[in-house]
Length: 469
Image (cartoon, rainbow, N blue to C red; front, top):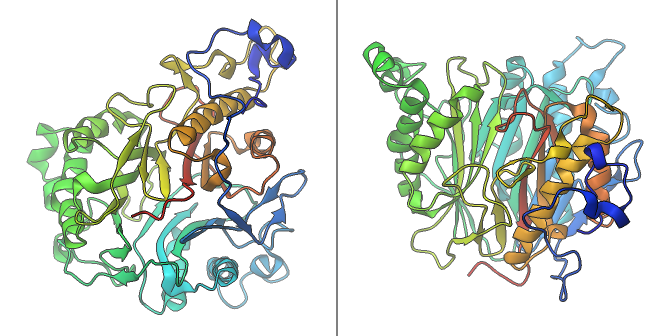
């Protein structure tokens, strides 16, 4: 990790005099004495256009396979020509269906590389730039999964990396024969699952439990679209709406779903929380932390506004948990800096996987100075590089504490306030990873949980020599 040199007002300095920058509270060791084993296998790697870096279309990591940043691309022309059909785009199926079909052909090619298929998928995260894409996408998804759909998340985001791209998907699957029995649970959840979505109420794979993203949607179809508890007129003037919605999700939906899958709130290891309004962050955190003795690794991700299929929703919570009676246990991993928010944990290790909370370039409790452009000399330094270097220093220290390395990353989700920063960020990643192919998804969002930050990373990492038991 010694390769990262912060940018900003000092960004043009050589590493030999980088000690002139302000002192940093903590640093990851640059040269570990016994570096952890590289335990991941990049699958179907392709060049990232107009860079020297490579993209990993998939990652095999022991029992798991990950397909991150999947979209309707041919990996050469941006969105694939057969999706665009520039000569007659309205002829035949819609653009969104063509995009979905190409996307899932790409996913299928990754799965085949490890002998897997769509029945082995344990989780899908779907992002869109327009609500128009949702129904065509879901029709294709029903076909692909033959009606047996794993737990999923669907929400709206600002922009993706390819012109004309409206859908991006993250997939996690089990490798057949590697000791993980994928089972779609059949209990009746506390809410009605729409046939449009059609996902299972939960899914088990070994000791891991996957539950669909939960929202304030009505539990009964005839009481919707929002649950009466969430939108009762008397409640709205007596209680902060985001607190009401968060508490409803946890107490009325998430708890019951986890229990049905043999898990509990205290066995949650990772949460991705999608919020449409930055001002709702404190209220969410207040309720979230009140329900946990030790919270899971957590990342707050901005949606557009509105950001969900039901436009009045404020939040969606997606979780990964462990079986309460399983052998795999949660282990809190500390980082070199305090987590983004008081009460959070830096990371959670659970067997062969390490989930980090969202990382932003916070050092000493504030955004690093190099993240700010010097108005007197604005063309010196590259702030996003400085931010990402800080993030990756922290990530490597967390990984080392868990017995692994950032080189074992299986899923890199990167959230930018401006995707124009992506090329510089790719350079930092490629150097940090010693030019190893990147399992990268880059998404532009309207805001980040820390004012002034340009980039946030949500990182999942494999832990070698640990079978999860």
